[in-house]
Length: 410
Ligand code: 3PG
Ligand code: MG
Image (cartoon, rainbow, N blue to C red):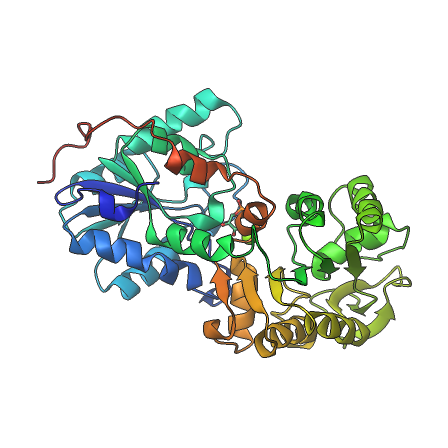
């Protein structure tokens, strides 16, 4: 795989696909870890005389441009962190993007608007995605893939552009794959995986992939309710997503192959996530119909901490509860503490999980590696080929530098 160091970038326009999908709340960006993570690549390109066109998705806008998902706050934060202006185009590949890119000089930075404002980005149709990739590719001479957190997505900016421009992997992708390498192959055991979080439908299949690899899988957060429902328990108003038959199948397979799937035995419940009411503890097998599970309970905390204390290798993805609300943060804090204070090699995966541990006051160096990828790192650990990595490895780009539609900047 080519790296940024292999590219001649001076005087060239470089399209960088980053994963700047940061958590944004009422007061703006809640955690800028993903923006900081792409600085080494961006700074190296700029110092070497490139003009940078940076692009990313943000959230999951339903269809077309939506101001709720603008990258404007991200562009502003990136500008602060780079110490140079970042021009945000008002569109992704339209007239505003073209004008901004045409005006770029070496050392300059343009950010395209949210890639997912264009249906071509995520289309399942190769032709539709390819047409969008053609437009993206026409904005630059070279392509750098550095959005590790999106590399499990077969999307135009992640996969198809690499086939259209000379390309390389960014430094973040190199650092991520080097760290995650330690969790594949010869793993120091016991190896325990902790899963939680909210993108349950996405991540459920990963459990199947990890059954043959991990010694134990501890399940809390939003994912616990899918397994509880699969066991036949009511989950009240709790988040319930994903295929219950699949969850049941994983429970059976886990039992057969001796991998313990440990579902949080108790939860903290409340009438709703905005309710001012204090949470109460309920057994996971008896969640009242009018209550929502918002954190794992104290018995789960003790059980998970005891198991994690025995591990030599731990991977954790997904908060144990709605940690943004302090009274539902105890489970997430306890798991973070168990990782930080034990002797295992620990990897935290996912923007939300990384944001959670930072928000709870844990420094990044309390853990072996903090990955920007949640779904991406999970699929990597399952042994799957990430489409974005495969695209960077493929040697199918046009040789040499093609003429840029937007004209020369030299
Ligand atoms: C993430 O936050 O996990 C990545 O940015 C990918 O986002 P997605 O799950 O919406 O594709
Ligand atoms: Mg994620």
